[in-house]
Amino acid sequence: MGTLGTMLKKMAKVIGLIGGAAAVLWAMRDRFVSVATSREPQPPTFRTSGAGASQSIEVIDGIGPVFATRLTEAGIEDIASLADASPDSVAEAAGVSGARARSWIEQAQQYT
Image 1 (tube, rainbow, N blue to C red):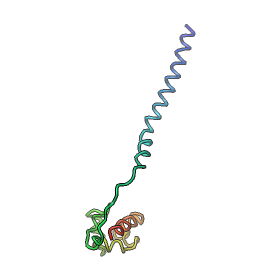
Image 2: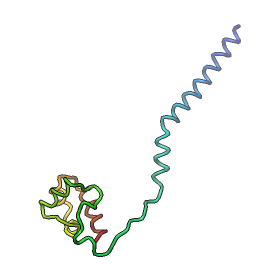
Image 3: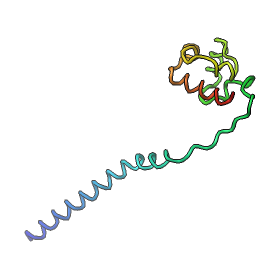
């Protein structure tokens, strides 16, 4: 019976190792999936020439009614004025970070 007990202990270790490896892979599955999906190409963006001059700033990704109101109160009323604004003035007017303001300005410049 000593050999049966030893054999069961070895089998339990092997099953434990396999189960542990499976648990690690299962826990990291989101990392593998997110890396694979981040390599997909971005869909094309479409622009129309001259359309930004009177277009609402709410077409910019991340600018909704609240930020649009803040920017309008600061004198940034359309895409063209947003494209010409400085990142510091946009960040201060909207109450956002400089990086976010630069992103909005870059998007607006694509429209003009």
